[in-house]
Length: 67
Image (cartoon, rainbow, N blue to C red; front, side, top):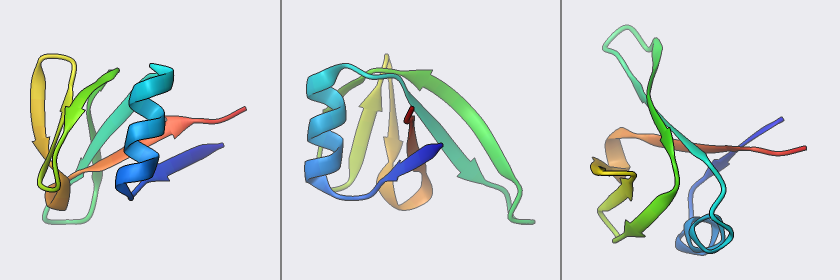
């Protein structure tokens, strides 16, 4: 089961526990495209850094795999 991270608290918990997070953006046709998988290094109200790259929160989904 995948859980989408929305809030600062959810992002903080994922960063603290160092779980792998998938970054997904949707095309103009609403097709999900997986861009990266990695650990959250930092986040702001506008951006999330996963690995070496930074993604805009309003354009991206951040999902963590739950057991």
